[in-house]
Amino acid sequence: MHGVREELLDAQVASLGLPCQKIYIPSPCSNSVYEREMTRVLTEMKSYGVTHVLFGDLFLQDIRSYREKQLAELGLHGVFPLWMRDTARLAREMLDAGIEAILTCVDLRKLDASFAGRRFDDDLLRSLPAGTDPCGENGEFHTFVSAGPMFSASIPVSVGDTVQREGFAFADLLPVRCPARDNASQKQR
Image (cartoon, rainbow, N blue to C red):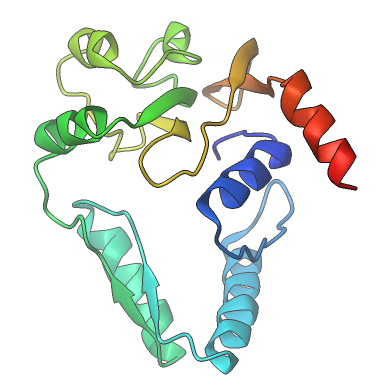
């Protein structure tokens, strides 16, 4: 849904220093295929001792109920640390903490295509139309986080072309190559 290159996901994982289990699904993907793949991976994770799954959902009760039902069938528990947080305050807290993000995908029914590729910053928050959730909780937009206190290093990106398909505008984020970093990596090999 975010339309972000896998290479950038890999850079996030490396900067976080966390393990990653990728789940590949077809596009388009039916809900039955999605549920089957999630069940497969969560069952595997459970065999490693995983008991809880964290979600960033804020206030969409139908989505939370769906997640909790699916997890309960596997004997797992959902954790929702942001649940019912004030999203205007949360957006401000994220910016104050040093989070840097770019809007990668916008729902054209809710925002103009020009929002795709914009930085998630004070200017963006001020320019959101009335009724738009500042954290995109109603699906107005999705982001790619490139820097923040949870990362060991920022992930340099540039914004490429924006394309529209199936009612969404997607900004193509391109990894920015750092010659010094690339040379250091090659010397370590």
